[in-house]
Image (cartoon, rainbow, N blue to C red; front, side, top):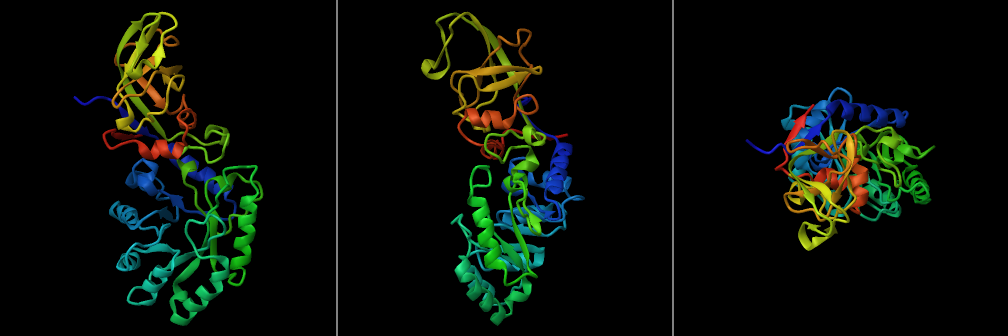
Length: 358
């Protein structure tokens, strides 16, 4: 039989997090961001679980939009990265996908005719990844008007660079740039609000917010965990304890002898490693849990295993499930110990870990 390493996905928690996002969005509607395979949770199951509450989805690319349609869901889907080939515009028109156009070549494809999906324009307000500069927007809009493409334009999108940092003034500056840049077209919709923006007091979210990581219980705010923001963990990554032993004082554990026992210590090996998506750089003292009791990692994470100190769980035996992150140990905590963010951990759980939906 297969090993029992599993990512348990709580779809009720997902739905409650979406409701939290909607409440925090105020008068704005919220499109559920389900890109990157639903942040590692499974795009079809995540989108289906939100089908009766989310009026619109957002993804990165057309493959993800097609996966939503393959799941039998009919809501409009925003393509945040736009289209990567002219023929993708045909799929957008047929599938009711709304690409976010951000570059000259995409405008040329639109102007060449034949396909007329509804679309958004991205405004570069300071992130400097994608989008038209504010100074270029009047010319772009005049061009849309001349070619008739503007009749399918839904509105404007931008993205915040520092909304996760409550001490940064950049979000307010970007908002001001966005308002000024789009003021000549008040009838068109606007969308700027990522997850972090939902937690900035007084931050306008305009017509559509775009909650992503907060739907999955991860924190979008520096220095805060998901539960501290009122969010519930959706994924619980668990793996079995496959052996226990007593390491004597002075002995080492794992590659490089990176951990040395200061005293006789009961330890265990857990059947999960970086090939499953657990972060290799999570080292000694990274928290885990067994039977609701917090324990800690010791030594280096291997490809298929990692070691834990069982001093705080003296009754643990082989076969017991170890929570790597979930309700007892937050994914944000593990990410902090590994020098990364919860986004990377959740999207990095590999395909050899089955998802079980609760």
